[in-house]
Structure formats: structure tokens, C-alpha cells
Amino acid sequence: MRLDATRLRWLRVLVHGLAVLPLLWLPWGFSAGYFSADPVPELLHYLGIWALRLLLLTLCIAPLARRFRLGALVRLRRAVGLWAFAYASLHLLAWMLLDLQLAWGLIGEEIIKRGFITLGMAAWLVLLLQAITSTQGWQRRLGKRWQILHNWIYPAVIVVCIHFWWSVKSGWIEPFIYLLVGLLLLSLRRERLTRLFR
Image (cartoon, rainbow, N blue to C red; front, side, top):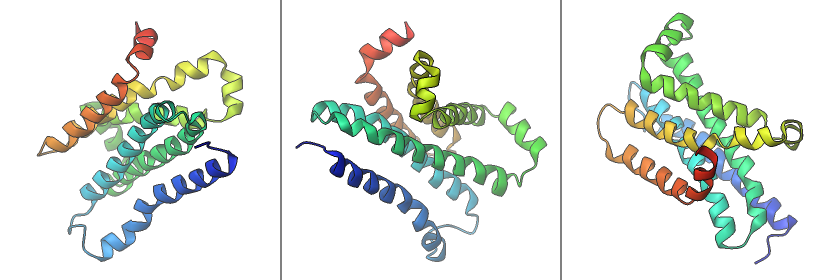
């Protein structure tokens, strides 16, 4: 099947539609009692896990494009990546606003003292830089440095998986599965990664 401009446009619409669904579900989830009396930790987990899922999905696109010879599919990577950044930003905002109530001194102290929060902030900064520079204009301005910057998505994926694992108070199976998926997706790029980081 050839992925022409029309099909790609509809796929992009589908990506945006599916990516926004977890946000649209939230009001109903709260009213239906899916969150406990102390919903902030659950909301943080919900937003964070969707950020991680979408981040992993960005790593799926290139292998799928190669496997099915649909080179145009990689044009969806920016949309998925921006949604991953959006969920990561909402995750961060919920932590700062709902959990720590914008107590900036405490926020800074938590980032410095708690390792999993340090990792989460580091990964978010990488995603922020990549979101800002995701346009073709920035790609032209940065030249070869653009690819170097966007290669940092690979270690950021592992950092996010470790952030998740380190943040859970009980149970290791779920974060282990996400870490395993992340490592599997990176293993598909082992030759590329070897060249980049040797």
C-alpha cells in the first residue's frame, strides 16, 4: 500500500484524535469514581504513563516504516513526539501545582534531593528542547547539530523508564515491562547507537 498525501493526512488526524482521548477521559474518570479520595498520585501516574507510552510509540514508527516500506510514515513521528511532550508537561505541571502547590523552594529542593525527580526533570528538558526544535526551520538553522540534539531521545527513553521504576512505591512488574520494551526498541537501532555513542 502506498502512503500518499491524503492517507498520511488522515493518519495524522487519527494520531491527534487518539492522543487526546486519555485527556478527554479524565473528567468522566473522576466523576465515575476511578480515582480515589487522594487522586493526585493517581493523576500523576496516569499522565506520566501516557507520556511514556507515546514516547515509546515514537520509537516504533521508524522500524514500522522500514518493515512495511512506508517511508512517509516517519512524518507522523513529530506529532506523536509532541503529544508525548504534552503529557510529560501535564505530568510535571500536576506535580508542581497539585502536589507541591507551586512552593518553588520545595520544588527546587525535591528536584535536587530526590533522584527519580532529578531524572524526570532531565528527561523533560530533553523533550522540551526537542519540541522547540522540531520544526523544519530549526532543522535548517541547526544543521548537523539538530540530529545530534534529537539523538538524545534514545537515552531519554531509558531515563524515563528508570524514573518510573524509581517512583513506584510497590510493584516492579509494570515499570520492568516498560523498560524491557524501551530496551527492545533501542536494540533495533543498536548499529546506529554504536556509531553515535562510541
